[in-house]
Length: 397
Image (cartoon, rainbow, N blue to C red; front, side):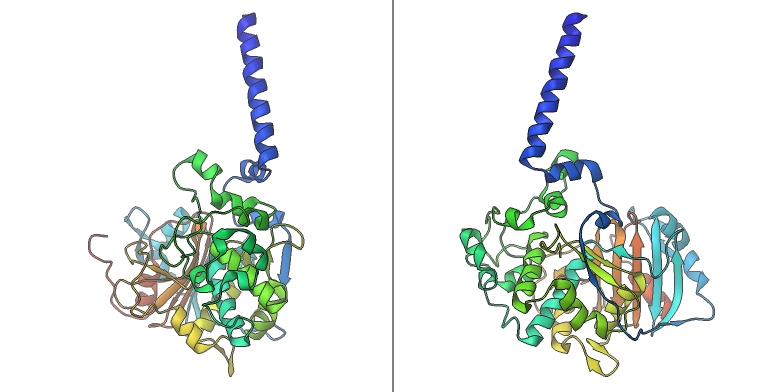
């Protein structure tokens, strides 16, 4: 019995020493252990840069009677099972779902504690915001062209040879060639993933200085956080403004927003996590979609260059580097562009079911905030249904 107790003490002592060394070596792992998979409010533990709302708000028209038939519309979940949308809402633990067509809100539904004005993080939807701001920086001449190297704007990266030949276009295409370990493959892999590292670290600059190059820039597409984080850093350097201030001046104040938004930093006065920490209300997230639906215009003002909008949401003859889901969505300019069936819709997407979907064919904007989402891609079916157009899921899916 004494031997058994002694063994337990040794094992406990070893584990204690192991974890102490682990957290001293990589302090961010303590946050990973404590918070695990972040939820829509985890951003609150990080410093924020506030983006102030417009002085004059634009308001969508609320229909006198909501389209309650959406609740009974059959859509598919992540298991390819056909279920009523009302059940889809519950199954995915959706917090907000707004459907807007031709500037009229036809359907909206919220979970307890949520409204169209509730500030929520959109996770990787932030990447699409970075794309918008890159277009603004090009318009302003702060960024000359996408062929420039990232080291032209962040010269300290020259200390790491991995960045030597990486262009802004490589970053926008997610073809930087930089090493990035995703979170798929089990709990242990997720714990030590770069996904977790860049979300929870308090010093992204230090982590970027250590990253390795594993592919020639411009040759291999890989979905990762590093590339949009670097683009956000470039925008700050190029404009001489904080990312929040630049977003506010060039976008948020000009498009009729109703609520303040925010960017989350890794530390006070640190680097903005432009890969996954943009906070916005559902109603203003819809206005980002409206801006792109209208070719970058708000009222009589061209806010985002029309040619930038067009090249961002249409991949043209470019061969898609990705094909997600039955809709075969390609990742292009940090937006998701479905390639199956009729073209014209596009989306900003974040984990746990955060979505901004726009269907130009029907003038429809859909915003979804969720705790984990129910899967699949019901947005196109909903938009076509409301427009009285036929819709069929692709064969074999």
